Length: 472
Image 1 (cartoon, helix red, strand yellow):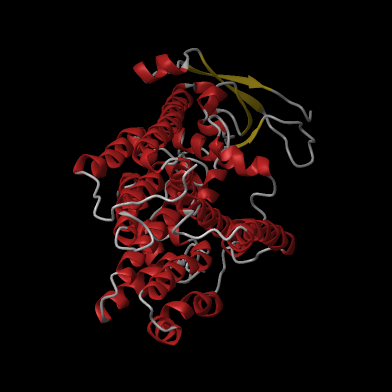
Image 2 (tube, helix red, strand yellow):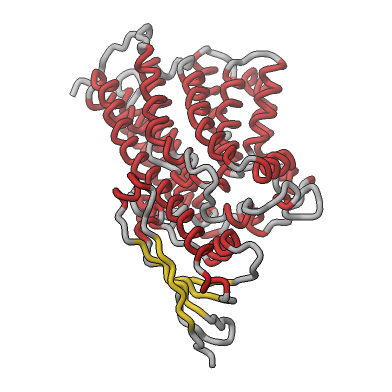
């Protein structure tokens, strides 16, 4: 293999190559954007039948969440719930465009490489849980971070720097971005070294951006105490998780050091290989905050997010993985055959979009099922006499990504069908009579398959109520 090759830095992707990833993205994720008012997972708890004030959850204006976020999401939930999915749908292309603007001006990458990375960043089949309204916070923080990086990379004076600081701080409402801040700083340092700038001068120019992440970690909880237990969990890493993350990181860094030091790989002679190593380091940086919290405990947990029909909503932990994996893929093509970069990127992007379309149609089917179940519950007179029901869901094939529907979701679904009734639910399970005393089993069945449901929007939902007295 000839690892020494010449790339013309003037090579510039054509307009159609710029537009293709965005067109493919819009096609593959369009079904999710169309499930306007469907609630998934915690959406029922956070946003269903909630006023703008209810979304704040607490009596005070601060609860560990950004006050701006609470006001915005409260308004969206009360007045226009579809805005969650419309903005999510648009946010990822904006983040990808901002990344392209950053990478295309870097000496580290050619413009075709920058386009390949930003395209795969947009298209890789990650974070399908974005279909949930609850994930809007992560999506917003993601676009704040990358647009902030764009403003930071432009190296303009006060306005650009001020905008970058504000956007970075807003992105830190998702705590993992506090750690990910090391990435734009590392690229800036590389650019500085390339321009033969002294380290002291770089430190002087970037001192604000170096300190904002650790300062936010220590100061923000004092100014805005976390009252929400779920929120607090994201700021409470476990010792075992940290150790696990450091072990993985040590392995990645050891492999990188072996190739760079022992094998003496240099960017000028082993461009693709060095990019693969850099991409692996970026992927680890994106994973570490989640590993520290106990996620990705093993290889199976890492891979399940890519499997159709699996993952539930754990794919939300993949939020910071696309950049690193995109660099790895571009590096592999450069390593094997630099001339295959464009074609290879297009192939991977199209295959990724097929998976995205598969995930997207699953959420679309799940939305149809939920709508029809509510209609069936509303029209069934027997349901009205139920006080506490066990739900026997026999239409699981319509549940997106193999997700389970929690009991609090069923509670809200029954409330959506009969808002004037006070009914409780649990999923079908053993009744111990001490903590659970149901008076009925609600059986949900569907007669139609997925394809027919896609074409007709009718899964053939039927609801049957079976009276029981398990504790009599």
